[in-house]
Length: 289
Image (cartoon, rainbow, N blue to C red; front, side, top):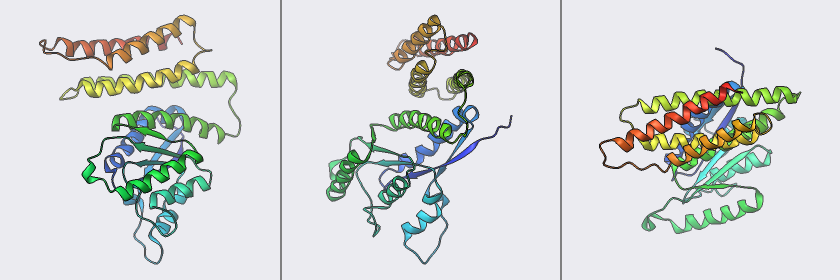
C-alpha cells in the first residue's frame, strides 16, 4: 500500500576509526524506516560522503562536501571513539566542521562517544587528547550520549530518532492534531509497532543459524519502545491493560538475562517459547485498544 511521506536526509559523520559504526548506522536507519515510516509519514535517507559525494576540483575538500551533502541534510548522527580527525583549515576536523555547520543552522545533531575498550599500543595519544578537549567542549554546547557496543548504539539511535522525528514532524505540520486524532495516532502507532516486532521475531526465530543473542537484542529494543509507549498510553488505555503491558515488559526484560545450558536444548527452546508469549500477549492487548 502506498503512502505519502516526508523525507529527511541523515548525514553520518565520523572520523576514520569507527568504520563498524559507519556500516551499522545505515542498517539502524533502514530498520527504523521499516518500523516507523508508514505510521509517522516519515522516511529517513542515510547519507555518507563516500557514497553520495561527487568528485570535483577547485575547492577545499571539506568545503565541497559541505556544499554537496552537509547543506542539504536535515539530521546529523556523529560517532567518535579514539580519534578526532584531520584539521580542515577551518575546523579541528571534517567531522567537527560538519557538526558546527549543523548546529550553526539550528539543525539537530545527535552525537555519540564510544566507551569500548581500546588496545593501549594502538592509541594515538595526541589524537585522543584532541578528542577529549572536543568532548569537554560539547558538555557546554548541548547533550551527547555514550555507548559500549554496537547493540547499545543501535538501541539508543533507534529510540532517539523516534523522539526527534515525532518532534520535527509535529513542528513541520501547519495544524497540530486534535486530542482525539492524536490519541488515535498513538494507538495506531502502537499497533503497527507490535506488527513489526512480530514479523521480526518470527524471522529471527526461523533464521538459520538461530541465535538467542539476536533475539535478546530484539527484545531489548522492544522493551525500550514499550516503556516509551507506556507513558503515551497512560491516559488512553484501561488500568488493567496498563498492568498487563508492564507485566509483558518485565517478561521481556527477564528474557534479556536468559541463560542457555547444556540440557539437550530445553533452555534454548524455553527462550523462544517465552518470547512467543511476549508477542502473543501484545497481540491480544492491541485487540482491546
